[in-house]
Image 1 (tube, rainbow, N blue to C red):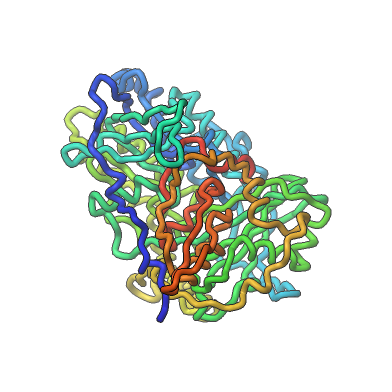
Image 2: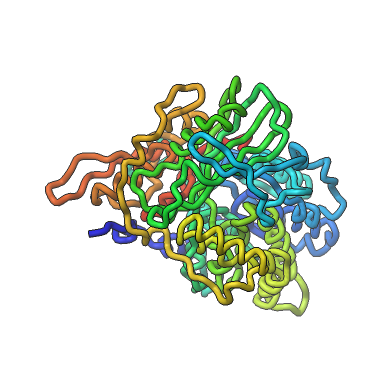
Length: 564
């Protein structure tokens, strides 16, 4: 009998993250507009609100002492940001509108050349670059570094950024979002109050903008509470990447497909790798694999280590040194998995949290920035005389649906689903979709939940290379390279069943790039105990896609990325 992760749901409901306000009115923190998440979408929203305050100071005065606040659960803005990244600058140019030039932004430079390689175990064949993947006029960036720069821009416009602050519950009163409840700090493993205990607070706002990024905790709660989920379920990929100091500069961006993934439809292994130059002396290399894969022995971290042993890739890294590592999920459902609406009373949703990612183009940052800008303008309209808050927030949906984000996502709406039929057939279908700009096939193809895929087991793990500490690394040394500083004795933020079939325990153990899970002792009924080390977690979100649930840990926990 096949095992499916969805048959063992976590002891958690999205509605657990929704609550009424609890602090007395004189103890709550009042802000004008509240943004949750200091990533590209959230900081773009904050920057645009700051610009509007600068343009209309009389209206801004109505927002109080803290007109715009941004909550960031990481140690600092950028700490939890990870992407490729080759950035289409269109969103940033529209956000800054001449206030900042491209050469003032923290890019490593424009893309000067690119190649797409089809790999076998020993050889590499250059193939024509698919039209969706052409990167002419795009720029290489570290999204972590970009996030820090955007935060500085926001603060210069009067925005207040609150790092190390997790948003634990969405506050709803009378059917309207009125803010968020932040998480407690200083609790022990069993939830007991330690000497340094600090309770969370209710933060009340005129409008709350959720820009939490992939696997957003409150975003999922809002989609459920207000009935906003789209026709198809969201699906994800897991990306694991490393940053290397190298002896020789890389002159072009490189993407690969093929090995070490298997092309057969039964495996459902969709993905590939990227290798980007970061100036003269660094490169970033990463592996991305869809989480609808079926093999319990597949490990994206170990696939990346295997990829580095390929002769073509090894030459790029030869004589170099790994300086950082990280992992993150990427929403891949695209157009068909978008919410029915992007607003609710008192609430706006934007960025990766609602799936604004173009998978065939490997792009999402400029969509996040544009959606954040549009959300800010809709929030500001709530201050207009004679306009209801409901009508003002509804203009966000209208703006998003008439933007380049919407039209571009619609053209590629069925491409990701095509690869569920295997690499070769999926590639042929994707080519037809590209040629017809999404008109073939007509209609929308549904996505299938990652956790609904039946598991199989092969001997895939036998081919993973052994760590040598120079080219190939194990998971624990990689967690160290992420800068993870999670306190060992805080309550677990992972909701998961701990008595499950062995195949499922092995899937979770292999899947996790941070060695959070371990297969424990067997029961007599065919199940095993699942052991957890939550402090290893880098909050990539893969477990949420594949049967468990990640919730926010104590603020300031997790990785401290600087180059990813």
